[in-house]
Length: 247
Image (cartoon, rainbow, N blue to C red):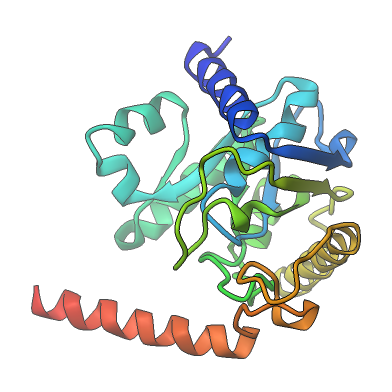
């Protein structure tokens, strides 16, 4: 029993009703009923971690998300994150974060990660980091690919939040478990291919509004292309580095 997590899930369900969010969930049976697994999620906004948890509840399971140290340092969110047994990611002590995640996987937990590391402004899959595959291989657990779509309409980078009653459709698709039976690079490529196939699937069944900011350029939207988004990300990273040097 996890009363804090259960309470938050209940509050999330209430918020879904208030917002009028309409969920389509496929592949929930691919979430293992027991044992550890890495839950790999695409990253188009700030709410995927909430939506990706829905299929895990088929077996009444909880996901322990890897989250930035800043969230744990906050006096409000920090105690909550620790109560939920999420995993702190400190870029200055990355090895510790990695070891904690592997230990959780070996203990039979579901560990949620974003292989892209940061939000995709283009809403396309960015380059994947190797950490997801490395954790799965070391812990000898499967990777479960999960794609959410539509959440970028609720809250994403560079655009206002839309947390009122928007009646937004949200798609969540879970792919077949990927065993950790390949070298890191090949396993990462296999994961990305699986998530791209899931993304294509949910996009085919989703009604996109031509010219909308939340629609990828290749589907007629005004979101930047992946190449344009990479340029924006690089500029932002350089600005963060500049500010850090002057603080």
